[in-house]
Image (tube, rainbow, N blue to C red; front, top):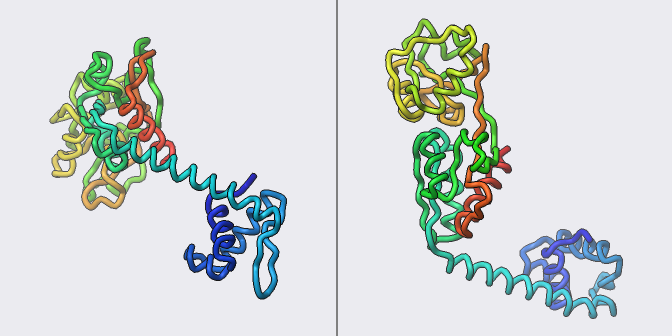
Length: 298
């Protein structure tokens, strides 16, 4: 049956006040909107709940019998919601999330804000480390779960993919390449290039993609983490290659993201936790909220 709680509230307001006008004022709805809700409920139930004339509205016999049932439904729901709110307010503890630095800004702030509003007594700890350290933190139990791009082939790790993102060229807005819509890797060779360090997971993905006869730029400087590389580019020291989600929004005043091709390089960001191990309740709440938020963005 296609009706909602708003339709039930509208029906009870008319039943209690005996007037569409008074009910519409009490619910802050227009009379036409209130009438549509009543019509919708009647259509869903397949019965007539009111008899209407130009001067008054009265409940039918079926309508009078439905009043206590509708009131019970709303009372039960309100009691359930109060119970859920009480549980949320009593929940306490800590959830620890290990996350690669390049994914922190895109994934976590909005989720942390909502999670803290819902469960104010639960503390949140973020371990922002390299991909290998995120994997280690999850495997050792130092983090409840992780957000990273490695672990897909680890038999001891459950990997839930969230999204695939490309690597892009990061350049300052005033750079000679800034107006290009896309670049080949060979186009980067003639400019000062800042690289991610050997041993980082992102550098491994890039090196793997460029292994076959691709001219790669020579770096004059290398850093361990993506946010540091972005800061270097923003300071005008050179250009670099980073995951797209690590870049500021498109309307950022000083940086530009440019698509890379020949070859295109991507990574898959996902949630990891030990295979076969159940998340504790406070961690499970955060895990599900994060997965839900990413799905809604997609």
